Amino acid sequence: MTQRGVADQGNLNEFDEPAERALWDKTKAIRQEVAEAKNWRDYGKALAILIGLWPELDQFFAPGTGVLVNHPDPRLRANRHALLREVGRLFTGIADFRKMA
Image (tube, rainbow, N blue to C red; front, side):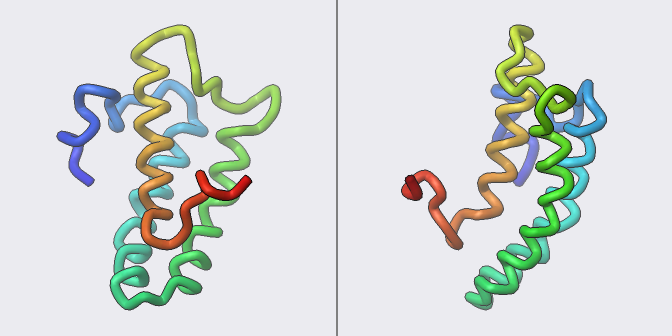
């Protein structure tokens, strides 16, 4: 995804917390590999790659030490929402977690 898609809603090059940067770096690192697996309809492989996000997601959402996603600062909040949208896009075409309740 290009920066243009989120430019008005967040800046994916500007993070305040190490956990944000770690999650973004890992997301960028696996994006192409996930896309290729999805193109081949190898959803098991895509999910196996996505499992690699677990440590960064754990750090991002760690109780007491993680990132406050809905931060009062609108810039931080927009950046964090944009980051999570990017992570969610990796799952597009594999699973719709919004329908799991």
